[in-house]
Every structure is written in C-alpha cells, then in structure tokens.
Length: 89
Image (cartoon, rainbow, N blue to C red; front, side, top):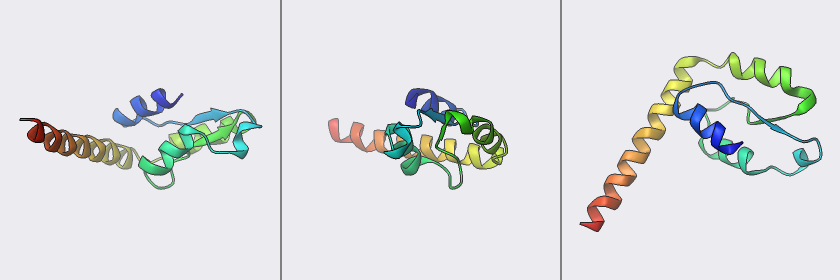
C-alpha cells in the first residue's frame, strides 16, 4: 500500500510495492509517489513474480541514503508547516 511505503520511508526502512501484472502497464499511486519522493535507484513497484528481486534490491539500498531521504522529507515538511502556520497567525 502507499501508506505502508510512506511509513517505511519515514523510518528509513527498505520498501517495495507489489502490483498485479495487469496493473503494471499503467503506473499507480505507489509508483507516482516513489517517482516524486524516493531516493534515486530505490525500486518502486514490482510484479508478484518479481518480488524476490525487488526485495533483494530494496534490502541492498544503502541505509545512509534511506536515512538521508527520511531526514530530508521531515525537514521539507517542517519548513512547509512553518510557512503555513506563520501565515495563519
């Protein structure tokens, strides 16, 4: 699920999303989210028959890169929230 990916990303954990073979033809919300926010090279989605390769790829991603992505997204959120909250005061 997309929510599972977001939580894994926030905690700097490896992640991969499964898609049905027929759905793989058109990128879904998980792939769109990954294309927007993921670290380069992090696999987004795999078909069920490709799960072992996808998991291996996700597990070999450098943990420091995962942490940098999580930290960068938290910083991005905090800055955006600060801007919004300041405008509301």
